[in-house]
Length: 133
Image 1 (cartoon, one colour):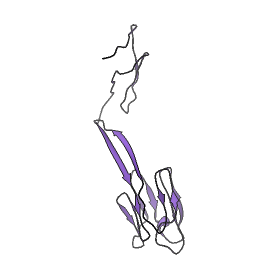
Image 2 (cartoon, rainbow, N blue to C red; image 1 turned 45 degrees about the horizontal axis):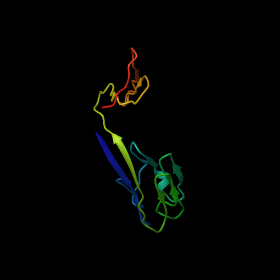
Image 3 (cartoon, rainbow, N blue to C red; image 1 turned 90 degrees about the vertical axis):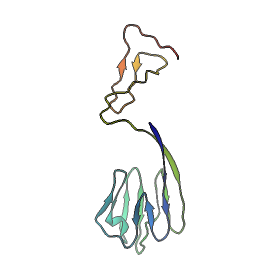
Image 4 (tube, rainbow, N blue to C red; image 1 turned 135 degrees about the vertical axis):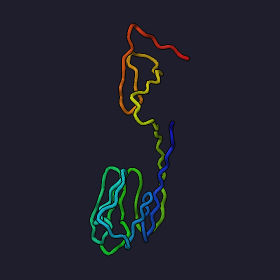
């Protein structure tokens, strides 16, 4: 089963919304995280410095409660305006415990690709040939 996922990031001067996490001056904690991001408390505090990963970059500047300018390949954060950037992603959802999924749709060659997370690729034997249909 395939699903299309769109990620939209909305931000304004007073606060930033990243996924379902709202960041603003009334929020105090050591760390916010999910499987997709991690934000240390120092990022949100005044004079907090920079925090980044391959997925995001956020900057906090002195005297402001809003996350400052920052960018990545997926979004741009800035001060004083609202913007939305959309990015789509197609996921293939597979059942738990799947050992292999061989669609046998290769057009030629002797390699049979496993499209599961196991990557159990195989080889054809006995002079096998591919046919359409």
